[in-house]
Image (cartoon, rainbow, N blue to C red; front, side):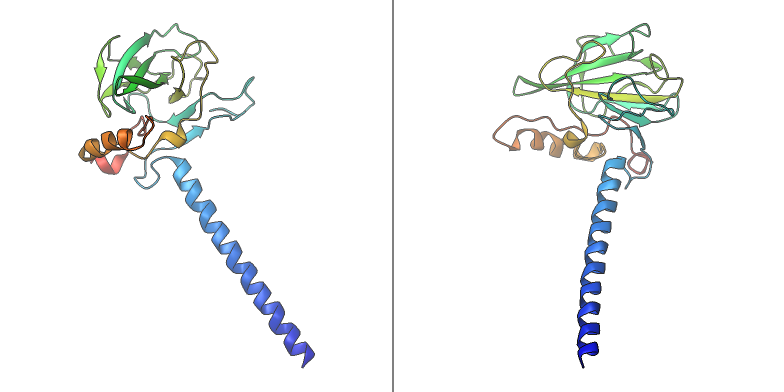
Length: 213
């Protein structure tokens, strides 16, 4: 009788433990898919996250990563992550960014952040140009300190324009609500003003395949 009670208690404990493991595994998988960037649409892959010591090639960085590196092929479109104004266009000689640009974003005429786009093969915007979310602003490339790997370095500076090799950046992923969908531009605008405090709402700076077929 005691053995049977003990066996039953152990089985219930094992079942509870297995259930917890399943829940934790599901949560970890969901979080990993979200961080993968557009995983539901099946195209975008992140090579290096904000704060990483590793980069797009094996080896350790001299400093922590100040942005997010999105994978892509040379010539793939780079798109604006939010409405804004181009405040700087960087030439290929700009180190470590290479060909790139900085976009200032405002909510009700209040600056709420600046996004940085680096390593592009080319840019197709000019300083002072007004940009809409989803506009193509350049093409994937491997300029600057890209280690020869085509990718997009995407950075976010919340308090001042991104300047210098180590700007005052934050992780842009928590500000990204998903892939840009041309049919949802009104919804994106509503998100920007729905809270009492102005906030920056970004979409991925790369196209997600299923939405553009």
